[in-house]
Amino acid sequence: MNIFIIILLVIGSIIALFLIIASLTKKAYTLQKQVIINAPKQEVFNYMKLIKNQEQYSVWVTKDPNIKLVYTGTDGTVGFKSAWESNNKNVGVGEQELKKITDGDSTEVEIRFKKPFEGTSWAANKLTTTADGKTLLTQTFSGKSKFPMNIMNLFMDKLVGKDMQTNLENLKRNLEK
Image (cartoon, rainbow, N blue to C red; front, side, top):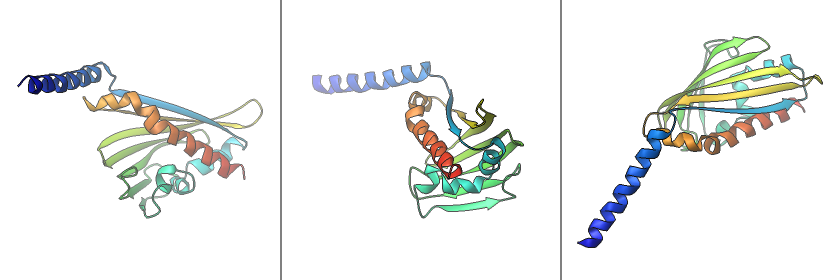
């Protein structure tokens, strides 16, 4: 009987610790990654604003060669949607929609995840010209997580940040060919 009580206390303590950490963790998260591309700002913008081009550089799209992509609207314009469906648990099911475009400068996309979890995030891309005429692309990924899943925000950079940076490096490589 004593072992049973000890096991229950250990399990209860782990759950309590998890909930305490979650209650102290922010519900909102923001990640930011950057890359410098040796190409004019407008050229980078024209490539980046087209969601279909993600097929050439997004690690999430290329993880599943059998991914089903459905496009709605005119690519590169506000309201364009890209829906994806994959049996790969690292890709899942969801859609993204171009919400705002400032020509030659920035884009904002709303990303709606359906599987393996439901949630909404936002991705913004901002372009600036560097002193030496190259283009700095800054990508920001943000969202909110409900309690107690907000504990995952502590690991968001490890979960998503590496893939964000890889996407930017792939995009850079495509434009500098």
